[in-house]
Length: 119
Image (cartoon, rainbow, N blue to C red; front, side):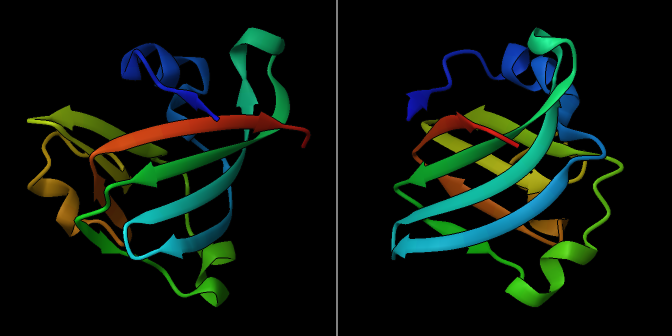
């Protein structure tokens, strides 16, 4: 797993995960979670690949039931925000950590890492 050092360039590289495929949510422990997407990579001529996002120090979350993940509309992509030693993740386009709680799924954690894999 690699740390995300620049959230804006990370999201730009993957077009904010717009029209991505939401593949899975895994609760590793009470404070650690992993989410998997299939998305296109601008750095690789828009080839499809799998991205795992691993969150550590989770202090708030709203997760989808595994059966509903395939039904999620990813037209608006995801939001990743950094504020006051917290990283916020949400499905959809949001502008603040407080507003991500309106999302169908969100995670607030102290750190985030990612891993690239084959489609």
